[in-house]
Amino acid sequence: SSSIIRPEGGGLLVGLFESEAAAWCVDSIPSDSSFTELSPDWERMSPFLETAMSRVPRTLEVGAKNFFCGPESFTPDLAPIVGEAPELEGYFVGAGLNSIGILTGGGIGRLLAHW
Image: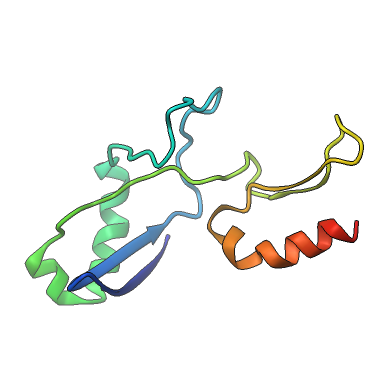
């Protein structure tokens, strides 16, 4: 797990990122799942949260105001899907980039434009 700690809204945001996340709705994503909040799996997440918060000991004293857990766009093999779709000639896909999609979007778009 990796973490990010930064100021946000008069407090601190302590964010976690799992390198091997738990699967959610593998067979089908519900059509109303836009900006979905999931119930945290405290047993799995507590060690990562405690490690992140131990980097700023004051957070262990004041606690957390909110623990948000939401789905991410991982592919089953953790690799992005980039290239021409085999089912539709001339249709190109850049997906499954998870949280690095914003960072790499320009480069992926250029790569696909010059495919």
